[in-house]
Image (cartoon, rainbow, N blue to C red; front, top):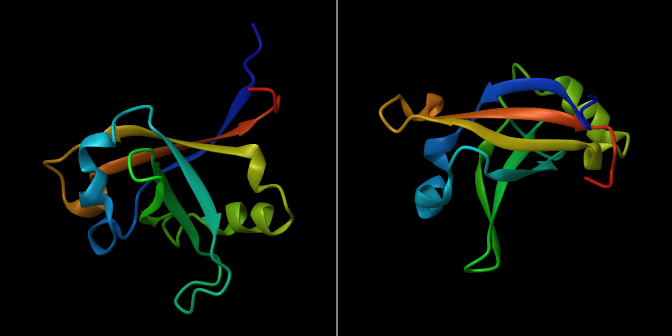
Length: 116
């Protein structure tokens, strides 16, 4: 059986304690789908990729943090080429007892079939 998604990378959510994850913490569970947003004008990291949660209750995007700068270069290049829609990001682990920079672990996959 062939899957419609292929593993690309996994990482922890960086900068979680500096952004708005606490506002939606109870909604951040394993399997939650997140958005990746390229932030090319970030003055600290030219390869910055935001990790954003869409809050259905408030109908607002909530910045949770970033893909770590040690892991974001390839993803940023693909997004700059206009291929960002091919990637799917989901939470694969939540550990509220861990250090804030290690509380949320992400899995990023490449969609092979855009119907899914």
